Length: 301
Image (cartoon, rainbow, N blue to C red; front, side):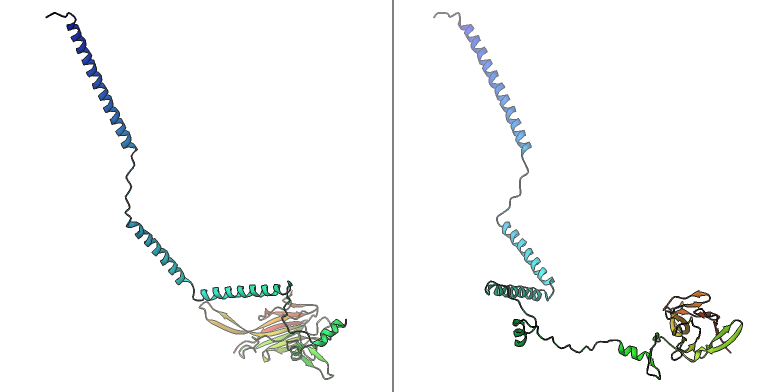
């Protein structure tokens, strides 16, 4: 048997080659494991939470419940409607349909708009007069039963002996009353320092002052005084006290009837057509007359 000198070297080379191959194989396996672990981590990080699985049995149930809710809301809305809602809605629809049908019928007649008349047709004589170029006779005026004011003027006027009528500029208000018997009002007429006349005012509710002797209650002959100059009127006025109780009393008031020269109360001109309350010891002047009218209340016993 012959001896081969290269065999030990070959054996060493084969061993080294086997060890290198084993080492390479082990490294490749380790790298594959690391790669697989990284991939699994990436996949686990990117995963989302699983959705709840819906069974096909639950879907129709949810749909049915939503439909039931819609039906319940519709029925509740119908119940909340007023009772006459449907009637009014149907009535409006019927009126609109009738109006459209009438308009359509009117336009279909020869393609022209038909003019509707609210009143009756004119008579044959009037139509014939229009065709001949003549004016139809005007209708007779119907009687008017409205208020003209003539009756009120007649009731608020005075007829003189010669037949002439004097219209009064003033009439008493509804609250006109006579003064209480306990209150004895008097009007003292002064000319300078002398008392010319004394007029008891409690005998009546209204005193008309002026130059028209046929109608006035307190005549004044000065030319600056109007025919119906002013009025002293007693009125019943109610007021409430601090406890809320009504307290009524009759008091005198002065009113100017839009006179030419005005009326003075305690040296001041009073406004026209306005009531001003008179109090004890008030002084009144009419026009430019120098006479002074002082109101006094007699002392009670």
